Image 1 (cartoon, helix red, strand yellow):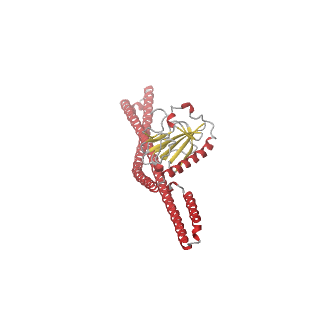
Image 2: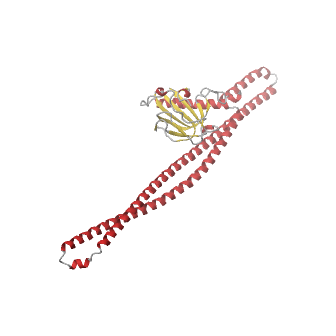
Image 3: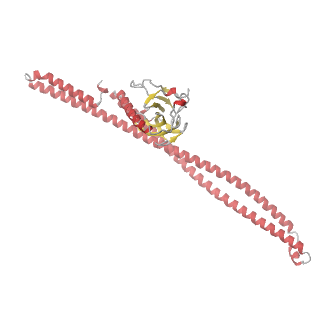
Length: 385
């Protein structure tokens, strides 16, 4: 039972026990003072040892929690960088595909322009069968001379325009070829970054798992699982109470009542824990736990506004949405968060990535729905799987 007492409670218990021992020793104190003093010293020594043990246990637990939080933060940063780099690579590839298509069109235009120029040159050659010098010297057929000169001028201008178009197309093709080469260099750089970040993510994930095992080992050794769960739940409830005051300011959303039983699941996966089911340590769950895949999208079940996005002891990276009319949805154990407080999100929008933060052994999503601060069964609000 002593393992489940807090430090202050145990200290008070020990002091009370000491007082009882001292009172019981008063009648014998006058008869055997040296013996009473020795017993008193022994009790004082036991109290000191107990207090020292408690302080050491608290330090071990705090160190394990701190290491876990640091590991969760490192993994979240690595995951977010990887996601951003992947998005940049996709944008570069899309731009490269667009440039390639433009290059093909310009190449077709150049081929057409070259054919037109060839046809013009052929026509000019045909007209060149007339002796241009003789026509100039011959003053008898001035009408024919004017007509031939007009034709020559027309074809010459047409050739110049066609040559200008070809020159412009060739320049555009050269620019696109340069851009494509630049895009390929950037894509290759992003691929290198992706490989490095993937390695960092793997290292961060391994560090997270080591931290989880260390925390679980400390809790098992100290027998503090129930006390730890109670502290975590108390911290969550205090956070929810604070968030309710923020949620009361949002009057532009109608809540979740209208869609009861029709809302989509935040992630697709096996249901690992039901609402009200006893968790490890014997406390009933106020939400559900859904098995997920590391890095998969966590989606908002309905339109809402982000009112909390941070790390919370026991729940890891948590994001809370306000849906109006006192309704909130909570998503915990995330690998990283994609939204910030104040962001407006729509139904089905990605708000986080599935993970195992906060001490969760395997990747899973902890999901709650709250009505005016009280936890309600989420399965009654979601569509049947």
